[in-house]
Length: 310
Image 1 (cartoon, rainbow, N blue to C red):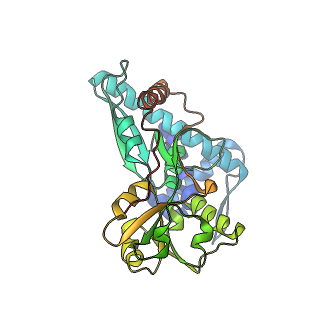
Image 2: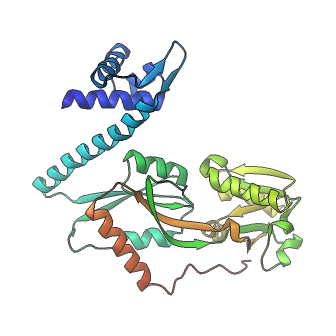
């Protein structure tokens, strides 16, 4: 069994790195040993998992099928060990929850406040990643549950919509747009737009620019930032307008900056609880159901839309 685990780890590392030396370093073995492991695995399976030459490594269809199941096998084996050790040592039960930095803190605090009678020692460990990264980590087994914005459509994940809100536009208080109670893309056309970096959420980034193109309301230029606060001096000076989420809108609305909701229905920021489709964990299932009940109890919150701020 231990040898099988080593073979799976070698194959997964090579599929992720597509480079023998880097893959070997990732699993802390020599490159010749990693090569030997891949050859042994392919001999056992009776087929080729990786096409390789001196410059490139490509995963075959058979390799992709194997890697998908190998990840699950390693994940469930590790969790079985941890569960047994926790039970024997009476440790807390821990679930790892990923959250996007764009998620309303309300959703995180509500989840953290849940108590399950059958799991009195349940502990949630939160990690912050961008939504695109969260889905990758969820499928890789690094986290058990994700609170993510606008995740992709995929048969490998299950998602439950828990709230939605508009984007907000930060503008300078001396800007003519500050007199509007709400804004649409046509009013923003021809301006310099400040957006989040594309890698932070490729789908949303593309959706904003695609919708602008569809409405013939493109910006004059696009500037990207890693945090909303970076946009403040440009907005305050009237040189640009910034697309921000609700939590960032509250932080930016001060002194020379005001914030207005964006009315575009096609660009709503939707928040989901996301799990793996193949996750049959009773604990995760109970936590999701308890979360739904909890949010229904506090339905007066109802994802209130912020009015014009500042």
